[in-house]
Image (cartoon, one colour):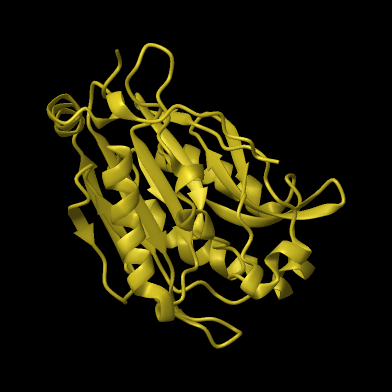
Length: 270
């Protein structure tokens, strides 16, 4: 039974004020924040829609998978020698998607399309809905990457029990543009997802005020499987690297194997 990875994982949380609807400016801003991390981290996490900000207006600047921003992300992963992840507005197959990209050194690229679209901003009317989640790996850690509003839906985040027992993933990631008006929910739900899934959780949010006047308080955080904060960021732009403990995760799952009593189910994404 695989209860935990063998080695620790260094994760960098990049919390910044995304420039409204200006991909080139955001590539420059986030690139400048990430390049000093070369050789110092294994995984870099950016906010949701980090090339544009979150809004239906961003559809007009949607890039495709062969565009400048995807190419830049892949090149940067090579340059810093770490996985880089965050979401962008991507046009493909006649639709626009809020797509989390997972760029690996050496050219590997995976993606996840946001499942839960924020209807209070009419995202569900303008964006395509993702149909499946992915679980990928980084230095032996099994990682579930999700996007913003997904955080509110515990079934989609559930750490299901695979054949042979144990846990399906070790780390859940949430990239977000989560307004400060709902910051209590953000902070509370991140803790809940860690506790109920016996997994580490990292949530990266933006700061500043966007072009629609919504303010973002940041509150990016890395949590251990008990829901206790390893690091909590404030309201200012910050880049913080935290080490997730493989031994600590294993010890908690051995000491408190609640997954043995978990309800087994099949997830129907339709």
